[in-house]
Amino acid sequence: MPVGTARTCMNGLNALSGVGLLTVPYALSEGGWVSLALLAAVAAACWYTGILLCRCMDADDAIRTYPDIGEHAFGRAGRLLVSAFTYVELYLVATGFLILEGDNLDKLFPGARVTLGTVSLAGKRLFVVLVALVVAPTTWLRSLGVLAYVSATGVFASVVIVLSVLWAAAVDGVGFSGRGTTTPLRIAGLPTALGLYIFCYGGHPMFPTLYTSMKRKSQFPKMLVICFLLCTLNYGAMAVLGYLMYGDGVLSQVTLNLPSARLSSKVAIYTTLLNPVTKYALVVTPIAAAVEERIRGAAGKGARAVSVAVRTLLVLSTVAVALALPFFADLMALVGSMLNVAVCMLLPCACYVRIFGAPSMSSVEAVAIGGILVLGSLVAVTGTYYSLMKIIHELV
Image (cartoon, rainbow, N blue to C red; front, side, top):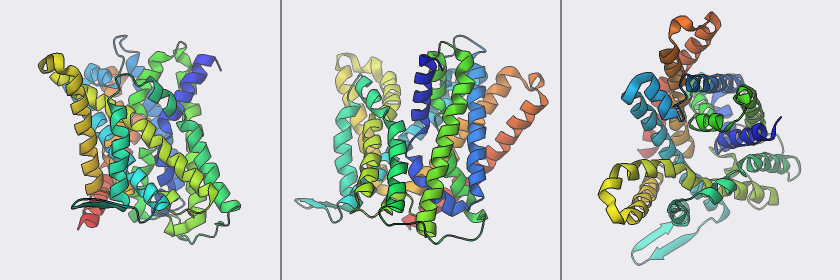
């Protein structure tokens, strides 16, 4: 494989390797063993829609980004729709980062409390605020080159987490005796499981950028196969490993089940904590840039101050949402069902059909796209409903 293709492959792996890794054991416990086949089906569907996006880009040399594809297919409304889904998805992922950090830091430092006058913060809420204070300055940077380089450790970090969990089970005494269900398929839990599985493959907004960066664009489908195959093997291994260890008792993030006194557990948790801190600014920057673009004319000479203010307010708003909805798995299932399914499944198919037309498609292509649209629509409706009901239940 050429060096350029290998570099793009690494970037693709990084785009697909994220905090979803921690939730797949919980997803397996919700959906049953048969749901692992659905993980593979979701991976195949998302790989194919990634190919469709790049075919759409070949329709016009002026297309460079995902919103460009939306505009080419459906005009200005298409650009706005793609941008809206993408930005809301990024916003909720950034919020999920804060929730994840709060949950895992609370496990490492239970009972922590800070009191300032009449204000007292403790536990997860304290750590959400502290992490926000740490990441806020990183969002003020205009150039995120250093952060982008650091975030590229995501691929390595994902492997380290799986190996650390395996070590905890095989060497540190956790074992593989978790009590799980004997039911191979849990229909009631499928919407949640599918939402979390789709959340794992939410790299589509980055695919056009990866495609345009390749000198040998004909290698892109092969590169994408490798990325999806390796990530699916990693996700599947973590799902099976975590479920065998803790059974139906597995928590929304498998790191929360680990014995905190063990070195392997600390390695897994600290590695888990690193990625959100380094990626938070990269995730919220597109949102901040869009807002700043809207008000750039009004900012004048105070553009820098406006930029800092916008980004700070953005961080504060994610803190507010994280404190109000501290339900990591349910929030990520909602993101997967409502937003990722649109960005990764429905919109690529809709844009492709709109640009090239149904008559130009082969029968196999038509069946594949039709199947993805049906699956995506079912997940969007049922997954969004069940995720919202779970969040509302937790709130009341």
